[in-house]
Image (tube, rainbow, N blue to C red):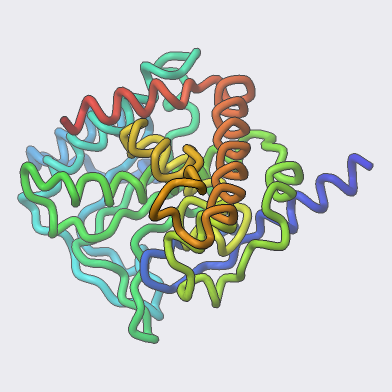
Length: 301
C-alpha cells in the first residue's frame, strides 16, 4: 500500500510545463549545486545589497542581468530595468521572507533551509512561441523566476498582489516538493471535476468555484489546485476570501443565481481544501498560513 500511495502521489504531482496565459512552469530535473564558487565578488552597490540581504542569510542569488541559460530557448523575454531590482528585492523581503519568518515555528531557520538558491527577475512575461505568456516558474525547489518586473511602480498594489500571488504559488510547489502532503485525499475532494492542462482556459471564475477550485488555472491539475488555494489564502483579505469562496449563497433569496446549489457545493469543497491546507501547513510544515496572510496583507498596506 505504501508503494502504491507513493506512486499515486508521484503521478498526480507530475505537472508538465504549461505555456499559457497566467500559467506557471515547473521543471523536475534541476539539481541543487553551488552557484558561488569561483565567482569574483562584484563591487556594484546593487550586487552588494543583494549579497547582504539574500546570499549571505539565505544562500540565494538574485539574478537580474540577462543570461541565456535562464530562458527556455522556445521563449523570449527582456531583462528588468536596473531601477526596479532593489525595490522588488525589498518587497520580496517584506512580503515573503518576513511573513514566513514570523509564521514559522522555526523562525528564520525555515527559509534558510528551504529558500530557493536562485530568484531570477525577468522584465517582461516569458513570451511563448504560440503567442501565450508564462508568469512564473518554479524549478525543482532550486529556482523561482518572477516575470513582468518592469511593470513595478511604487503604490501599484494590483501589480504587487498579482506578482506575489505568482510567488506564493511557486513557493507552494517548493513546499510540496519537500513535505509529505496527502495529495490523494485532496484530489478526491474534486476528483473528476479537474479539467486538463490544455482546456482550463475555457473555465470562468464561477465555473472554477463550481468545480471546487479558487481559479480557472487551479482546475488544470491537483498540484496547481493546491498551489492556487495557498496563494489566494495568503494574498486575499479574509472577508473577501470567505465571501467569494466559502460562504454559501441563500438560494431562497431574491436574485439568487439559477445554479446557486452548484455554487454552494463547490464552495463546500473549497472549504474542505482550505481546512486541509491550513492544517497541513501548520502541522506538517510548521507554518501558520493565516499568520503569513496577515503579515503579507499588513506589509502591502
